Length: 506
Ligand code: NAD
Image (cartoon, rainbow, N blue to C red; front, top):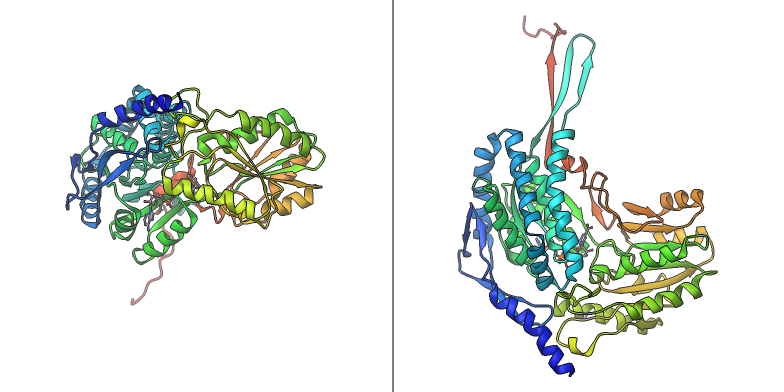
């Protein structure tokens, strides 16, 4: 029976994969093969079979894309009126909105993320374009500085040029839109190097932008590997800025490689975020948030609350309830709307996450895992997992696992938990649960992270600065903070009186 079920569920993936076309690069308004005709295989996380072939860009393709982007920047796009440019940005948002179901399905097929979750991400992606078009209209303004009656000095913002965008596979479509939308809305042109493990929706983005009718060269995609296509983009002299989201170690390599050409960088890197629960909190809501925050998106979430700190007075009860949740989480086919956790993106990543569960055992944790239905044996499934009796100095507490795994620890008082929360190299997000308003603010101030939520799950407000501190990132994206990165600020000094000019050589 299980075998029959395995077959029928896998058949759906295989059938959909057969309908996929091979993916090309998108350069200068055309879908093209790589210069050397190279390709790589795109593998299903559910069946581990090849779904289609992807053109594998190299330095020559990056160079072609950058030249096209540079030409568009100097030409039609650079000269276009802002309102006309923003109309294109709105149009992209509208087209995404029209195709939410289809893009969400592609994303689930490609990444193993549950369909119900990719649908929400894709809808938010459409909104990112509208939001940035609105924000450029309403908030991209300069400042004036009056100097007595001699000068008026004012600032203007101009686009930087060709933006190189490098993105990860964990929420590929949405994270791409977080970069493409502000880059285009502020007037730059783009070369995107999407993650090699999740190329399908990036390709769909190229089709949508093509359909929106943007001038040739404004938006380009070069698929390929980080060490080849990504590296060439980072080192290209005509690429003025690199917005990168991915692992901390990759970010560091990229910064070194971009130094010779003096790149401007935005770095959104890894995380190991704490969730701290005090006894006076609304414990039912804290349980909902802790469970969702680490097991949604298959645990492949940069802001996942992967370290749970429970006050010792409530720990036993909270852990018992969390165990029930872990056992009940619906692990399943990502294309099934009721699935809560799907397969991890790739066997390499699966092996890595599994190895951390073994490390946890060696380090002395009690490991409690949920269930994987038998018929899912072909996919890269890791059951939702709790690591009990964890200690701060363990590798499983210090290192990013990036899967459905939560380390659970206890604390006695506020001082101790703040020290533990801060005792990691990362500083992306943090979550505090307490009904003591003073303590909520105090702990929020004290936890070293770029973003902190009090009595809340990770609800994003697009207007606010997004990014990490410590090894989790450099710079902020989101709202008008993105303008700091995607625009050049220029100060213009205008004399309106006869200020003193020293006279040499008279
Ligand atoms: P990764 O660093 O392996 O790859 C990210 C991208 O960088 C890919 O497109 C890859 O091809 C490219 N790349 C790799 N080596 C390169 C090189 N030498 N030069 C140029 N490009 C190169 O990351 P990943 O495994 O795809 O993503 C998971 C990581 O991303 C996790 O650490 C996660 O926390 C992080 N992440 C952070 C945020 C955030 O906002 N801070 C959001 C999502 C994911």
